[in-house]
Amino acid sequence: MLLTITTEHQPATDLGFLLHKHPARFQTYSLSFGKAHIFYPQATAERCQACLLLDVDPVGTVRGKGQSEGLLAQYVNDRPYAASSFLSVAISQVLRSALQGQCKDRPELADTVLPLEARIDVLPVRGGETFLHAVFEPLGYEVEATRQPLDDQFPDWGESSYFSVTIRKRTTVSELLTHLYVLVPVFDNAKHYYVGDEELEKLLSYGKGWLSGHPEREEITRRYLKFQPSLFREALARLVQEEQPEELEPDNEPIADQAEEVLEKPISLHEQRIGTVLATLKATGAKRVLDLGCGEGKLLRELLKHRQFEEILGMDVSIRTLEIARDRLKLDRLPERQAARLQLIHGSLIYRDQRLEGYDAAAVVEVIEHLDPPRLEAFERVLFEFARPGTIVLTTPNREYNVTWENVGPQKFRHGDHRFEWTRLEFQTWAQAVAARHRYTVKCVPLGPENASLGAPSQMGIFSRA
Ligand code: SAH
Image (cartoon, rainbow, N blue to C red; front, side, top):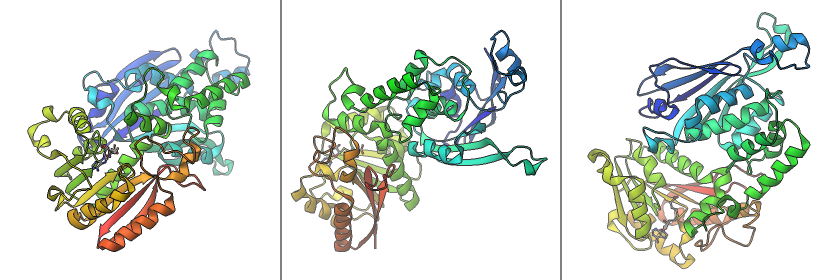
């Protein structure tokens, strides 16, 4: 059984710090069911690939256990080759710090979103390829699966239920490992250890923040808990509670700016949003970019990582927020050349500002809904008529989606400071009128996992100067 994690984040060898495993070493760990080996087939600044090879001892796992399966099946089975709960145990024991999001030598790396790819050879998938997609895609993964033949010497025997699976996403190493930890046993038929209360606690703790919003949460929970109805019901009841933002952060009263993120956390929408905006900006080839209403600097942090963006200007109306951004981005400690690429300024989007002129592109992420509707016209002129960047990437919530969040509902807004939230049609109508008035073309796209009738939680307009 082989798990391969690959990144092309620069420098890619950061993966070694994140996994707490030195890329130059071949390391072996003894586990109760066999051995785990960690090694790196490739470790250059451009591409780094770490392998976790599990060498499961099928004899060792049954000896003295008195199991009741047929004698032969105890000794001859797929356990050495198939990804299963053994992989989860290996992740939690061999890659524990990485799973928990700790990075001793480079703490800032643990929270860094990287382009990551995980390949599993092989995953037994009960429920077939459709289920595979239904589990990983709502979490934002791109999924590629190749079904293995039962025996390539005998094609007539047909396909097996084993797949080589590759999933890709821009995420943290900790999140990727957490998803694998919970989800790999879900595809498999067997669990090698007793499923009891402890398992339930683990599922709830590792599933925190993403499982409660997952469309397949019932099936995942049922399978994870190996079809034990009482545990399953309790888990589900607790997952539903977790959806209430108050339950997620019981100790501290969420301050206004946190509340929006906490609410959306189950689908980690904000991360997806930032990733999509970043990808869109990259694709335009822009070198000089604006982040208007930059907030605490989440997009700025990503922009800084890409050398394509030579000049980055973040602007916000809130001085306090800019201070937080300065702190989070560690601006005072960045090497001089890095720091020189980024400038933070205080300003408002409803006043014409010459500092915003002459840029290739601008991002306006979840900002316009904070403006009073009568000010929208001023904003429109400031950005589209005077600053006039080549591309404008603008996102705003899709109000239709709010009904899916129990505590928002159709009448309320997601955030105390929102002055309005638009339906898809309202946004498109506004975007097309603005584009037409200022000689831009616009394309509106959904942002985040789509619901068939309500659309996606957020929406994005990509404006290009004609
Ligand atoms: N773009 C950031 C922050 C979104 S929250 C992100 O996606 O993480 C909205 C931000 O818009 C807040 O930081 C708020 O201070 C800022 N904002 C609100 N009105 C503004 C205005 N008139 N001019 C500039 N920024 C404004």
